[in-house]
Image: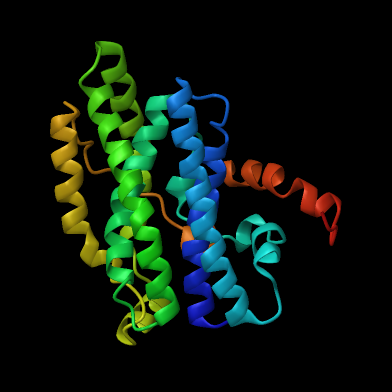
Length: 248
């Protein structure tokens, strides 16, 4: 398993799992307009995931993009733990997405400069959608935080609950460092300062308090996940596992 293959797979996995989470809002949105918006975000994430899976499949040479998405077990997924967290209420979803959207915006901005032409092209294409995702979640966070006492409390509680999953976003392991030295990967640790600035600015507008620094969960890059991922995969992969190699 090459370093570039694994790196590409990590990006694809986070997009796929967040897309699956957002698809759960289809027909459940608080308004028709928002239902459509969240469904479209889900489709954007699936599209991004497919692009990276196709490249990973090309690098691997033995598995298709569909097999990479639907034929791997929980320990073989390398997504951020943040994206697998449950939707909860609408405010919880917006908090989770906002924290990851800020990271995605910064990450894809840097990845678009990669010496790997395919990763660079995929990042540039994804960035157009990520900018909308960030604007969407930011605006809702400000509206909910500055709304009623109840809405403010709900998003503040969600922020406190999800904060422990943000530290993982900026971790670097030997694989990251190897590809960074070759001009391919992004230095995630270098994104932390700008992420802090962007997050803090929005939290002030939303009348929310940044959580205290707490123990940070980790392990997504090593295939370690919360119990949430297993439930996601059991639903997402059901048809492909029940009818292997089926064509439709």
